[in-house]
Image 1 (tube, one colour):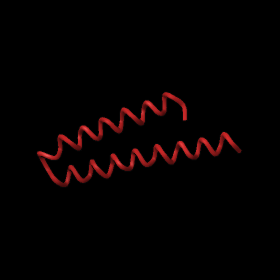
Image 2 (image 1 turned 30 degrees about the vertical axis):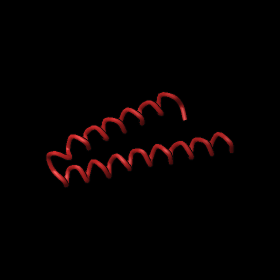
Image 3 (image 1 turned 180 degrees about the horizontal axis):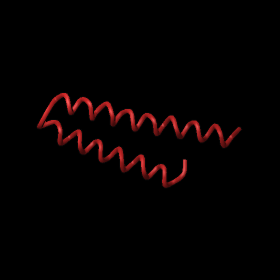
Length: 58
């Protein structure tokens, strides 16, 4: 995975984690939604990394 894409996923993930932490004191449903979104973003980053690695090898 290229460095700019990695940096983008890292920044977005940290922002989502920060928003999740802030949302804990406000609303449980918002916290849950942000948590799922954070895990989805991190998971998609791993999936994209694996796809790009397979494409580079094949």
